[in-house]
Image (cartoon, rainbow, N blue to C red):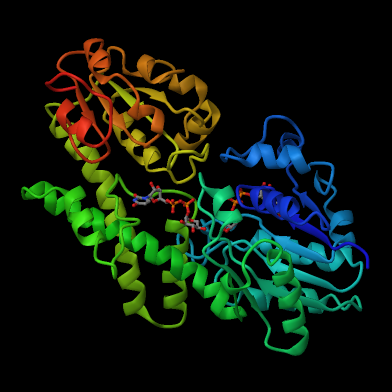
Length: 457
Ligand code: UDX
Ligand code: UDX
């Protein structure tokens, strides 16, 4: 039997790592990742990958040019493949009907059209991108209407990997979800996709459902996770107003096995390319199906997240005599979480924008996020940033002479800094926020940072 060929359209944060893991675990499968973006493909073929994930580089370099390929030759690779994964971006629509809530499916649609055009025999088309419920129907209709004599099965196989831990999530997933048509042909296609993951994932962790359950499960999982963060962040506001400590509350409730300890870390708010987008998408779907009460329930998760970010800026201003104008603020961390170079929808964007509006000067340091990515997410040019935003190459440099430190991403290296020394080189008196609280050295030490001595940071 000829080896199975997989083609993945979209060499992004999801497509790249997922395909690298499939190639790594399935030496009998030929995997090609294609993308329209030539620079991105060139980067995947170089020593400097476009995505930073712990463990990714090793796996790519071990398998590249053996059974893992990166190419811009979309049509040919699609034509040759048995199984095609669609892993293109599905941003929130910023125009027309559903603007601000619905997912923009034009890239998924153009992939479906491209697959139909490419021909090359019967194919299984797998939705990897997070999509609204019933998107598979659209993909199916486009494929079937091509009348090219080939038959297509559409499968939903949503991704649950979290950035920063993508490789371990892929290697050892809680579950793999595969949804397909309930017809016989649909079930054969489901089994074919199951057979890929079954090469390394225990069979009982591979869940098969119908298409719609699979699509909706992805949105629901992310909505529940985002809701948990908004819930603990809501409690953090109450803790600050009373004398409760939110970490203690989180620990106390997390020991209840029904609640569990994970995802209870209060923060400046959640970020990333999934949570907000997926919750908005869920709300849009509810309204579409005339369920306004359900939509309003989930919308509150987003409102609480916005409130948390604004509350952080207000607290920072309050503790600096209500003005940061002309003051230097060190921003430690810009990525939406540690161990990723991804700044999309990072809470740091809104917070930096607000501080710049208040006329603060920012000294930003992040171990992985590039200057270009910071500028583009802020909507500033290199020219306009001059004198207002400084890009630093170390945390120490950013903190020097600053009036305040805002710790916006929990990179491990920030825990290792010598805050006593840093404090001596700051503008006096200086303050530090860990994203929630104004901290003194004692408090900093309590949450695992290296700080000796006493007093404010
Ligand atoms: C994307 C989706 O946003 C997310 O909903 C889904 O769960 C997984 O896929 P991500 O991989 O993070 O997430 O997106 P991104 O890093 O933007 O990568 C998408 C890639 O697709 C880009 O490199 C883009 O150039 C490429 N693309 C997009 C195509 O090759 N063809 C297209 O038509 C559109
Ligand atoms: C998320 C889901 O976890 C993943 O399953 C899905 O496939 C994609 O979306 P990701 O966005 O990469 O993954 O990261 P995640 O670890 O979920 O964190 C998202 C945001 O929530 C980050 O900004 C993080 O800082 C924040 N967060 C997380 C908290 O504020 N508190 C927590 O306790 C956990």
